[in-house]
Length: 224
Image (cartoon, rainbow, N blue to C red; front, side, top):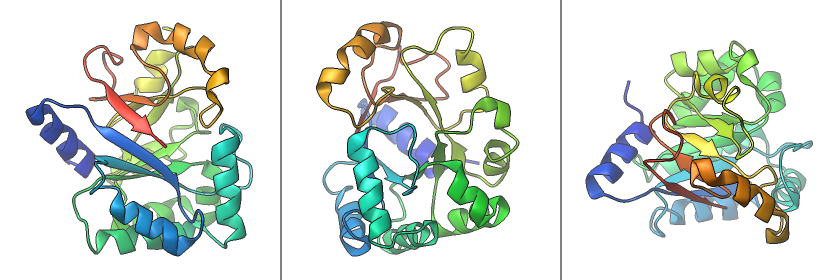
């Protein structure tokens, strides 16, 4: 099954350019404004849009993304409303790939099967679930792939050669090379950048297809 993500990377390859992948938190600063921002991103040059699912305990995020999630939660944003945002976006744009990014707990509470059904019908193309390692693939990764969603893994510049094959085993769509403290101030990043040489990347680089040759051939710039 070819997803919007697969189709977009094929287009970009034909055009000879990299993908600009944006990130924003659903519901920040409020649901209506965040929807308008998402709608405007393709016209502003975004090739793929990552949408954060607000969560009360964002253990893998830096201060900026944590604050965005808390603002969204205080504004009443929920996982169901996040899917409603995707549905509203799809009424005017059926081409731009959308990836939901966040944590497993809200999906577990929602119900995995129901979430996958609703996410697919809403127009979601992929998932990045930062607290589900490969050892837990049966929880969500494999069911998501069976439902036709790309399951996108995160690697960091410190992911070693022993761990990387496990990270990439069921990755599909793209692989995201992520700074360990995304959303932190630049003064916290230099050490990670120095270690990122084998990926040819700093924070937020993604590569495709499936990161079989991690970022040596195709650079994808992410921004948030």
